[in-house]
Image (cartoon, helix red, strand yellow):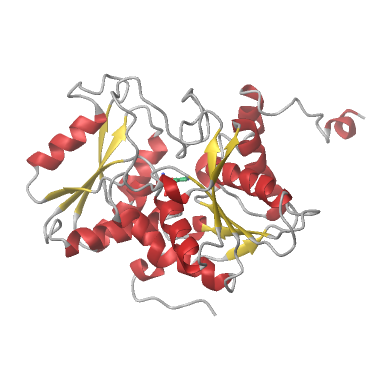
Length: 339
Ligand code: PMP
């Protein structure tokens, strides 16, 4: 029986762990996926949003009548909109003007206000998204900037919830934890908890886009959204997020876009799990890791969000072909129709 909750906030977390039996066929070590897209707002970031808002209240940074501000068009914005509105705050999302209209629409649907600003201007330009958001936070009385990259309540969400859930769901049998690294909150919090609880027996692997600088790439562009890190040309020094503790990551699997996207497509077709491209990268990494392991090992991989947000990209054959990620496949129905 699924739980009954008095509030949508109580329904955040508690996601299922699902064996990837078909993708893992022929591999001795079982691979289990943590289905974070089943969170109430559709992603792993609901956990971080709830944790950051409650911590800000506790620390007196958010008071009744306050305003939550963050530069995000994605999953963190949705999480903050849900949690923020439920707790009675005004929520303002600063969104890059090149971002898709659907992303702003969903934020507005949850009751957030959307401020569009460019990111394609130099970092010191006052019109730049980060400066616009900073200025709003300074000018609006009672405003609080969530700042997920440097907010330690972000990894803390995973120390308190994701990590313990995985430990309990696997009966302490997990030996390898694989996750993508955006802010680093998920891998730091969950990986840190699992390492500590297992007495160092759990290996933590970062799934990183091939050219991301986290795993040693040159920072050249990649397609897979929401994970990886690069040295922005406007940035003087390569600043690591404070939410990320790199010493907890034992190794990186550097995943080319094509491998990540094809893994995401196999996940929906073969496992019935419609997930986004960062899930594909994580699963591709988990498969690489699991192939090197034995039957006594157990791999857990995080699926951060749903493929519904990417139907016109990774889950579109036309888009995949256009970008050269999918070979022109013979149309299975064509011979029948032409006959
Ligand atoms: N995948 C998706 C789809 C995300 O939205 C995020 C969060 N930006 C991540 C992966 C990375 O998670 P984290 O920020 O906890 O490292």
